[in-house]
Length: 103
Image 1 (spheres, one colour):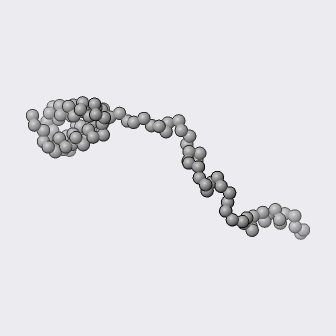
Image 2 (cartoon, one colour):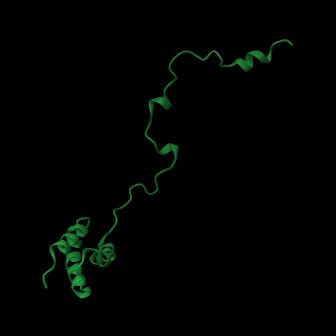
Image 3 (cartoon, helix red, strand yellow):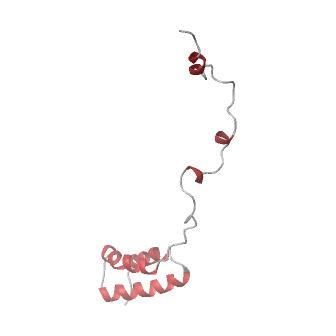
């Protein structure tokens, strides 16, 4: 049975995210599933092929597993690690100066 070019393009698009060995196996399984289901439109074909494609897809390894989270996970920054630029603020330490004033 010949497959519609639109369905063939859908199979090709869904297979694009798979690895080569899985891609060939998915394309064969997709053609068999479409022939068994008798799908003629792209919408019905997608509903048949989407769960099938998920079965062939292996997610990549996550390299961030076990990595620290939060503010320590960022790269070093000169704004955080360096001294402040400029002179001290004149308001700095005002509470300490007023603490020893006579009333």
